[in-house]
Length: 445
Image (cartoon, rainbow, N blue to C red; front, side):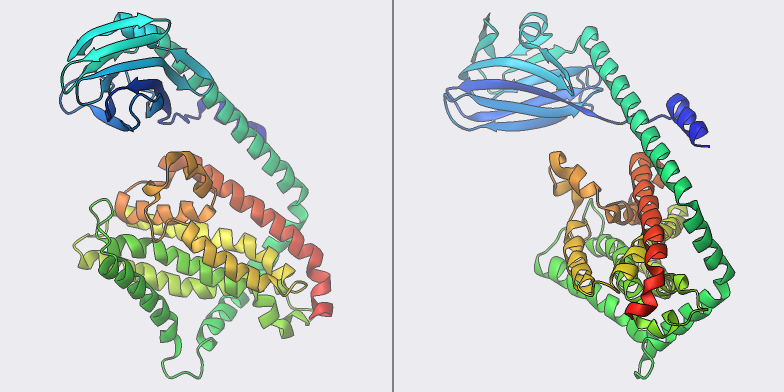
C-alpha cells in the first residue's frame, strides 16, 4: 500500500503552487522617492497591473530595493521615484530559489519602453539615469530563456516536494507497522466498549455541573461571555475594522469556537485518569476509554456552538451553504489531534504532576500564537511558515474557510497533508506511550 501511494504521488500528484520570485537591485539617488515595481502576466493594460513599492529614504546612500512577485509574471516596470533625479541602479537581479540572473544589461538593451528619462547609460553593470518627470520608468518583458529556467527550477522543487511526501508516508508507514499491536489492541478496546464510552461521556457532561442551580447551562455561558468580552475589547474598545470586509464578530467567533473545544478537551482528557482514579485501580476496567470519554463530553458543548455559529451568521444575513458542512470535518480534526495528544499527556501527568501547569501555560501562549484574535496576513511572508507549523492554525483557518472564505480543505492540500502527518504521528507516539506506562498507573495512583 505504501509503494502504491508513493507511485501515485510521484506520477499523478499535482502540487503546483503559486510561488514567488524576487526582483531586486541597488539604488542611489540625489532625491528621496517611492520606487515601485509594476508587474503583470500579460501586456500592461488597465485592470491587470499589480504594484509593489519600497521607499528610498537616504539621499545619495546606496539602498537595496527588492520585491516579491509571482512566477507567472511576464512584464515588469521599474518606477524610479516620483520626481526628477540623478539615479544610479545596479545589480538588477531576478532570484528564484537557487536560480539567479542578472537583468541589468538586458533591461538596458531590451527594454520595451522608457518614460520621463532624459538620459540613460550603462557602464560596468551600472545604469546611470537622469529623470526629468514625475513618473520615470523602464518597462521590460522577461525573456523566454529566463522563463524556461524558472520553470525548470519549479519542476525540480515540485519533484523534491513529492519525494519528501513519499519519505514522510514511508516513515509513518514503517512506524505504524511496528506499532500495529498496540494500536490494534487499543482500537479493539474502544470498539468493544463504545456503549460504555457513550454512557460515561453523557454522565460526565451531566455531573460536571451537578448541584449548581443552572446545571449544564454553565457549560455554555462561560464561552459565550468570553466571546463577548473579546468582542467588546477589540471591536468596541480598539475599534477593530471588518476583516476582509466581513463583520469582525463573525470572523472572531469562527476562530474562537474551535479553540474552546481544543482547550476544554485537552485539559479534561489530560486529567481523566486522575479524576477517575477509582476506575484505574480496577483491574478489569479498560482505562484506555477515559481520555476519549472526556473528549466526547467536550464535544457536546462544541456541537452546540457550531449551531450557535450558524444562528449568528443567519442573523447577520449570511445564509448557510454547502461549505458549512465542512465544520464537521474540522471538528473531527480537533478530535483526532486531541486524542493523540491526550494519550501522551494523561499517561505522563500521573508521574509528573507539573505537566498540568505546563499545559495551562502552553494553551495560554498557544491562543495568541494561533490567528484567532488577529489576522494572519499581518505576519510578514518570511515568517508565516513558522506559525503554520502549529496544527491549530490549520483548524482555525479551516473553520473560517468553511464559514467565510468558502474554500474546501482539499484545496489546501499541503497543509492537510502536514496536519494529518503530525496528528497520526502524535497518535502513534501517544498510543505506544500509554500502553507502556499503563501497568504502573494503579501503583502510582
